[in-house]
View (cartoon, rainbow, N blue to C red):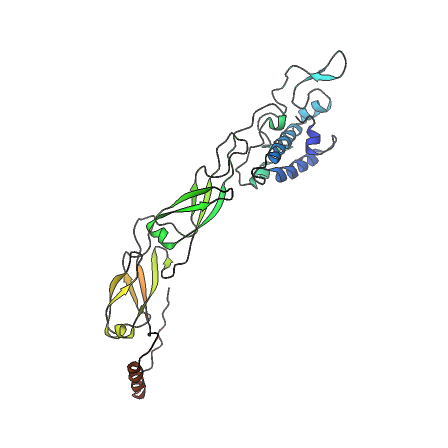
Length: 321
């Protein structure tokens, strides 16, 4: 057990309150459990320096310790017949009373020391750390863990379960609800880091969803957009053509004389709106496409058409989603 809080913080006995505070802040940042996950040595040292600071920030306790009236555990001392100081009857229940390293030191709020760790360990430096004060550690929730999960667009439409790997080697199956959007965060209760004191609940896992680009569909809110490639005969003559949808291919009616830039609306074939539970629409943007290999008849037709004057396409502006 550490017997000298000054030594624990690495300061001299005549150190000012500001020097003690600076020493504690420096050590707390280096040793905090969130910065040293699984490091028991750092965790125990963090508890001891927190207890030492909690002791020295109390002016009355510090004066009594300096005068030899109490020991490092807050117990009153008395001179024995043979001289020297020994442990007396238990005067104080704990030199580093309840509240740990939270609170203030000469009016300065110290909570900002723990805010840098996301608040998960606020109050972890409770009474009795490292033997200072004899109290018990306060129940402290473990830190939240953040992880990114890449999913397919179809997972967000029909729902799915994906497995995520955490830095500590654990794997957890994550349910992807229907209607989940890119950038959404799913909270898994109790799947985060364990309590640094061993007495509180584990933190949560925060899973950030990233939706991969789809080779066909482009999301726009709960709607989807796609390119619908059609042949020249279908564009000129019209008729039924096949279009891909999230639910599988369907036949759609193409008007006679359809041109690139036209849009077909397929109601209820888009993504899912999680708030309303309704499907959005799928907008198919017509793109007239030539075949990879052009036959001689098509070449002859186009040559004759050009000789007859052909036509000059009108400049029509359209925006493709």
